Amino acid sequence: MAAPVNLSAEIANLHAEITRLETGFYENVNSFFLCSMALIIFFMQCGFAYLEAGAVRSKNTTNILIKNLLDSCICIIGYWAIGWALAYGDSGEGVNLFVGHSQFFLSGFSDYPRFFFQYVFSATAATIVSGAVAERCEFITYVTYCTVISTFIYPILTHWGWAESGWMARGITSGIIDTKYDDFAGSGVVHLCGGSISFLAAWFMGPRIGKFPENEDDESDEILGHSVPFTALGGFILMFGFLAFNGGSVASISHAGDGHTVALAMVNTILSGAFAALIYLGVHYYNHGKWTLLLTINACLSGMVAACAGCNKMEPWACIWVGVGAGLIYLALSKMMIRLKIDDPLDAFAVHAGGGFWGLMSSSIISHGGVVYALADAVSGAENSGDHLSQAFAQLGWQMICALAIVVWSVSFMFPIFWLLKKTGKLRVSEEVEINGLDVFKHGEMAYPLRAYGHGWHDFERANKIQAFSSKITVGEGKNTRIMKIHPEMSIEQLASVYDRSGNIIPMPKKSRTLFTNPSERKLSQMIYNENKM
Image 1 (spheres, helix red, strand yellow):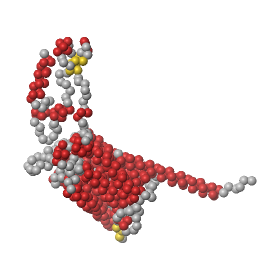
Image 2: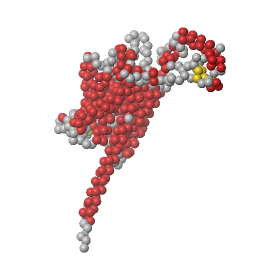
Image 3: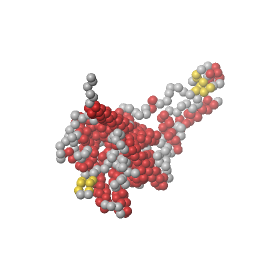
Image 4: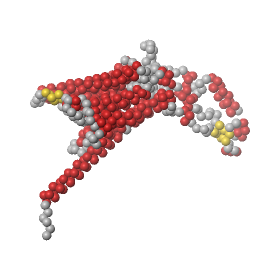
């Protein structure tokens, strides 16, 4: 006779198995979500590369591209070896308020999806600075600041703001006041950090040769980037990446409401960018009568940067406040940099520091529980409205303190490093190298080698017998005879001479826009034309 089945034990075993499968499934789903979002954020490096390459002159394209490549390579090594440990490594009480000190080289750590996601954030913080020092920065300087930011500055900031035991994350609790650092996707620890260092680096580096005239009465030459399409493509890639940057910061997709929060963050991000772009475009057209593309891209990015802090908890209508404010702050800071004669070719400071600071403030003003909602409760006479108002303003004050701490930490850490590099002559390239371009001297690789353009075949046209007999260069026989065209293909050097940056704001002499650069060439061409015409 078969032994009686213990149904209770079977049910318990079945429940344990279902729980195990459920846990494994949710873990895999969340890991896949984090890795997918991190891959899109990693693709932002391509966006930065295109944006910066298009904004510099062609003679410095290779230089700016290799810097964006090395961002990813240097940051992963530094963050793997030291950065992660300083950011999230477990440590004892007290010191844990400021820095972690375990899990170096990921020892004893296996949550690789989380590590990879945090690494791409670190790479973003480091790559911001390269745009501010473009076309004049020594290569060793770039390697130095990239290593320091990804290994020390950014990880310690993330420990302060995003680790549970960090002093900014803990905030202040006293009576009805309970403040905590509110920065969902890095307006402060990523963008304000990178933007602040960009200002310092551009100030130490000095302006590019010819950017600002020595005589204040003279008008400066506009230093133009060599490819508007490249810059526009980079801007679109960064816009795409910001959706994952902010939406992916939810960090999971398996809990109830996660999908809603991801979508809300993405919607708020693109809305904030749109309002920033449109307000800047309108103001610029009003002042200059031109619909600018390049500056509108920067304004859009500043709006997305500002959305990072509170995109997970503000209503879409609040993006009007975030986006318009970010666009106007970008405009003001960009003008300020010019007045101060600090050369920031990509407006890295105005976009990232301006947008980052505004985002930190906006998350405590316009998000749920912020100053606007507290004021609305006070006006309507809601219960405990006074307490809500006190909490909202206390939170805003804490955000200001944290923003100041981010700026002071970032600038104070990098100041002696830039100072030392400048004193040793390693900060900036020589005047000769800057004038002639960094690509050939520093890398031995031109982005657009002239010998790689054109072909070895000339254009030929049908000829009669007399023309075929008198011509020195013919192809074919009989009816298929061809002679070289009167006007052979123009070389790339001639094309560059004809163009000669005719889109520059400085009027160019008419002679420089003609096909030939000197009278003898023009006379020779006319003689050849007359001989073939006879």
